[in-house]
Length: 275
Image (cartoon, rainbow, N blue to C red):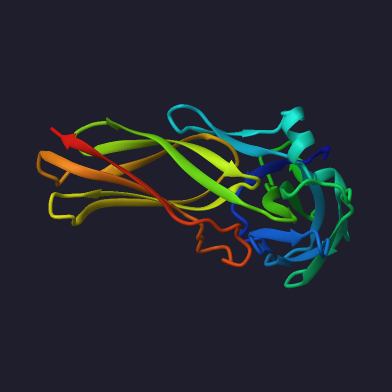
């Protein structure tokens, strides 16, 4: 019987750093210029050998006027000013993990010594592919399907140089009633300092007694000026005036406070009317 070999590969890019096949820890890595060294762990949770390869790239998230997020990867001028990707080396860069095995990946940053104070960054692309043979598909009715799934996990790398600062200035708070149940809150902001804002944005609605009647919080990273959008469920609220408050804090449940570039919380409010 004549047989055909078919290699079927799926590429899945994920921003989360945990997957059933391979786990990356920690989720974000921070390195100080005084040490220039860091490390993270790659763990094979699958039942097959996994081929791991590591690559460093520069990108950042940007927002439009309605808070929609996109990943920017081809901004050469911003890359020249903020990227550390070209100065990072991983040891090892390519390796194979057997089931249950873990590997410490050590990073060394050979950046110029004359960098201005601030936080520089890169993305670590960790690609995992199982060591499995190609899928064999016969030309008769018998079909064998075995998919080789490539997982690409992207984690953040931040390099702090000298005195690092960050800050947020709220320029305007806008709202839009999507329908009778949902109100979208748009917060136009300016990012100050020399480092990205890594933290949490808390949007809350208070009634005339000062009680919080609706709330939404979002952990995020803000690299430059932009607009943040978050939805509030107002389906059960009576018509009337409310205080809408937006608060920026440098705290994250997934990142140690000692790693975050700190700032004093920033809060801004406005009065809105629910019809």
